[in-house]
Image (cartoon, rainbow, N blue to C red; front, side, top):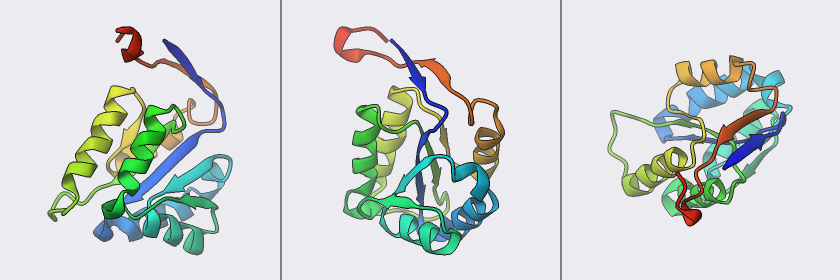
Length: 145
């Protein structure tokens, strides 16, 4: 089925501990572009971004306490348009199954997800970032992928 993202996107911001400072700095650098969108994130990441960049970010639970799953549920409900998730590739995460589930659900529902700053820069600089964008969202309940 076709789905259209509005010009104002719902963006989830997530970062593992070693990547939080990088995501906060990226948000500060991109304050103007991000300020036109609805932002949410997992616990500590959302709090740090809000405090250190001035951007309003709705906080869900911390990732290990279910925040990744909360955001995954919002993706499945069609309430998240894109995810910026700076994962730490060099440190084992105790909640790795939750992380994999979130990555999988973003793929299932065909929403953009950036796992590093270069991809985040590509997403935010795309003309589709500030405009509406129509894409195919699989309708698995009707058996149409």
